[in-house]
Image (tube, rainbow, N blue to C red; front, side):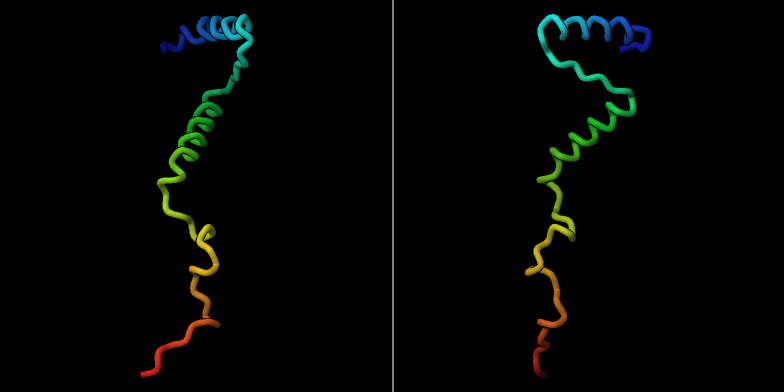
Length: 71
């Protein structure tokens, strides 16, 4: 939407939400980008491999349990 139309649209959306009892959330440009990125990060979480901190201790290398094979 062109920037000059943002203020009139904002007022229309706020009035629309108020008449219907809908919660309207307002954010700055940076805040709205932050919210979108947080949402995308959460949605993409199942597609990412687990981080090192999420790997269980049983799957990590522990020197005290390591027994080299005899040659």
